[in-house]
Image (cartoon, rainbow, N blue to C red; front, top):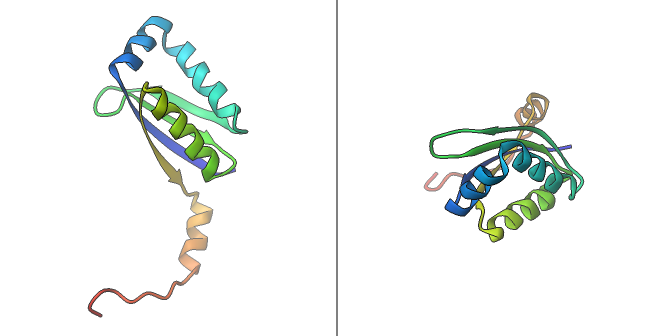
Length: 106
């Protein structure tokens, strides 16, 4: 199953809700959200800095990842950024695949 890294910056309301409910309850809510589209939560961390949350999900496909991102963003709790992760084995396959491309001006 494909893996995705999600970085999220919480809105003021998202931070207030997290402080009211606690970190573990919000992590559980995220885990339930991921399970609702057939995935699983591998890891979940809070951080300080530009992003407030880092999580890794196993999800069936990009459509599932997009559904999660849109759901969270439209709820107004925060702004998620989703990164598709590639395994070392997949990178081996990338190295073997050739694409035909001409750079601009070449």
